[in-house]
Length: 132
Image 1 (tube, helix red, strand yellow):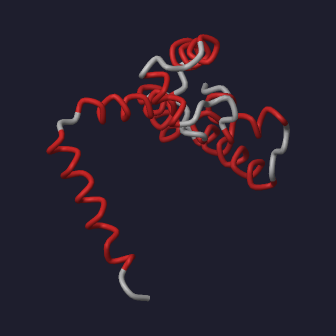
Image 2 (tube, rainbow, N blue to C red):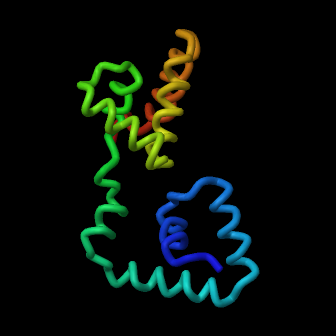
């Protein structure tokens, strides 16, 4: 049986790919588990407002993308650098790990790749900037 905490993490998209697949497989096979997940969704819809729930939902302990970039460049003060290291390695925050992976990928891009990405972003939003 999947614990309630794991179902909550599943709803928060805070599980690894393997864990997410396991939960989804269990949900397909177990009506009781689907009802439990439905109950958890109803509780959230009513608004669970405990400090812990708000902290997890808003990811208040997660560094922002700028801080993660500074972490990768090793330009933070040691306490901040150590906290982000702990957050990524020990806690294993999947949101921050994904941000770091994206930032690392961007660091490896060549100048032509960077220009092409910028052009695609500009082209995709140019229509939004035209006359209203």
